[in-house]
Length: 567
Image (cartoon, rainbow, N blue to C red; front, top):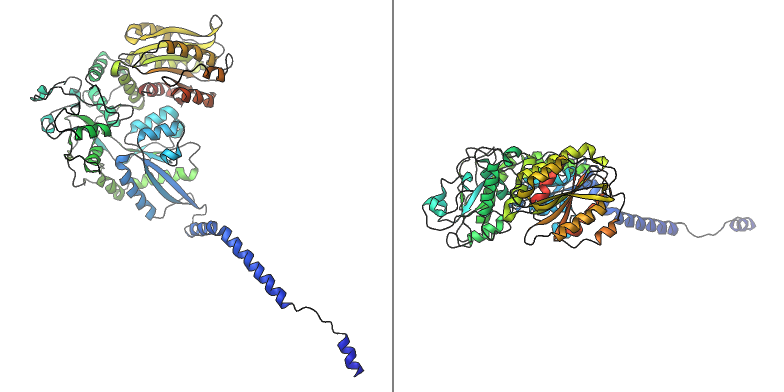
């Protein structure tokens, strides 16, 4: 008995281990569930991407399309998404936004407003290469790849139903000379073509090209400077009705609401075929559709370029996806989708039906479009002719850094002076100690260009470089002079051409304190990478102007772009 007690005495009694193990397991399970919940969204997206070999996850390609084709582009985007595209190890989804091209251009080149426009696009489909040219003129780095047309649409004359049949023999070259319906055997009075601002309305810009070409084209810089071209522009501008709607869409609305010919205050307006189709079939379609007339002879054509955008806001994946989607859009199946939306494509003759007012007449010959630089010059020449022209004062940098660029500046200024139909033009230069101790000099006072053309040419030819660059002091003096000479009822602007920073004189704050508001815009053509773009943008936005960032070869196009706008 004593042995058994001794054995029992050696046994230790302790706490059982299995309840502790259960607690530990429960805690670990809870922590694991929390970790999975926290990372669940990421893991799910990653696993889905990996299942499609998209090791970099998902990416959204945003495409801004002009309203007339935005619906068709969205249909193409859905077809593309159905292929489960993978680009640069990203699964690609596409968002298509319907935006006016003028809003896209302004947003891309100033400050993009997400609240107003949605998120900034990676690709853009305007109705014409005119817009790609404008973007290039303002900032070439924003164009990521050469634009490629995905379809075309000829420019027509939109006319009331009663007027359309009598215009069957009308030609674009008739526009400068035809001012009365008696030309067509009618007693409707004055014949006028509403031309909404060609700087923001493609159909107007192309119609002006067709009128100037007088045939197959193209309009060239040399032909544009001729007396014949200036005479045509003068006649066209003189024939503009008193109150022109700001957009082609507004002009169509006015025509569609009019019961009789000329009741809108004008007779017809240029419009792309697809825009007229959309107008006549959309939710706000007129009770009587407008009729599209294809003038005889070479037809101006909107080419609907797809533009892959560049710049710091577009990543490598979006750049590659934009190019991949461009190639997808030009395949036959997708071209048929665009054709159903009203564009003309080479791979099919299918047309939308019904299409009231649009007969899809065959185009036998296309107008050869002007090159990119001449296109800008045409717009600025029109601006110089329309309603008396603009009042422009140019302040150009002649500091030593401008020496390799000065010949390009001279060519751009000479061309502008030679092509100007009317309006006023003045020329200043700036560097250091140009006029005594002043860092600026007025070479030609701002006055009607027809009176000062020879003086302007001589002053431009005589420009030469000088040491130093006191930009702000020179701009303050030039701006004050332009403000004193302000001409009411006209577009007044100061254009500054420079390649560097202000290195003396007053500072930015002092300059801004002397600015008077947005009636007199200051726009900059900034050459090369040494300018203070932030400061120039600040000044431009304060006055309602713009900043164009270019290299040497872009000066002429940029000047044309700046002077073609009405603000």
